[in-house]
Image 1 (tube, rainbow, N blue to C red):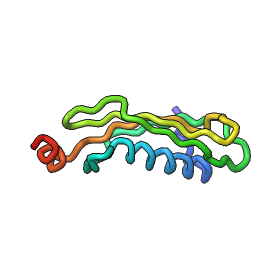
Image 2 (image 1 turned 180 degrees about the horizontal axis):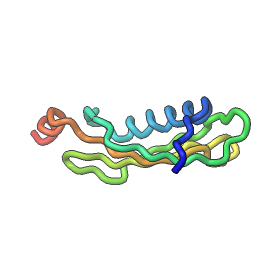
Image 3 (image 1 turned 90 degrees about the vertical axis):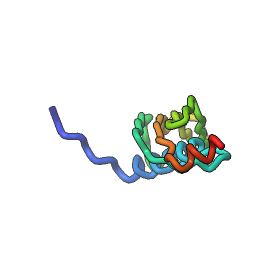
Image 4 (image 1 turned 30 degrees about the horizontal axis):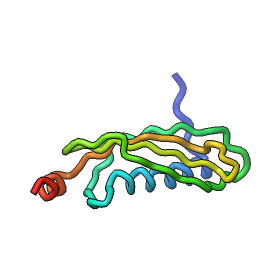
Length: 100
């Protein structure tokens, strides 16, 4: 089994863009305090310096303690640059205040 290769600069930048969008969607209007649990990313074929034009993220499911989100980043031609999903834990303080 070979060691995983580190991400190149364009991939890191796209991963950061999508991570921010996923975290923002998971926090929602309630402003939940979240802890990352998992993050999975799938990259499209990147050519040159990819410029994200359309970033979308949405909540797929939320429980009292976990928020499941997914999203994608596309370029201005609509080509998929990166898609991903994440799970965030809702911190206990946010759970109790939301329940009141």
